Image (tube, rainbow, N blue to C red):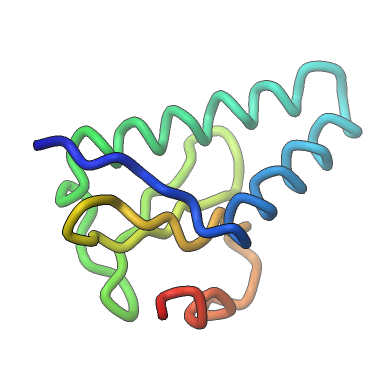
Length: 99
């Protein structure tokens, strides 16, 4: 059974802030970021175990066109998206979201 991805509220806020940031940079860039992250999430939903174990019981999938990773944990009924993180951010800032 395919599990649906569910964003932690802080991960969703990060995602929305990044969309706004890129939208302010150039016309259409925010939309392209939105589409790229949704592509990454769709790939995670299609085959979450394709992405090897990473830190603190999570897995991650990197975006191709932007310096971002989607960090997620598998739960019984869903995939818990804990961060939409820029690759230059402190790597473990999101760990409190796992609880």
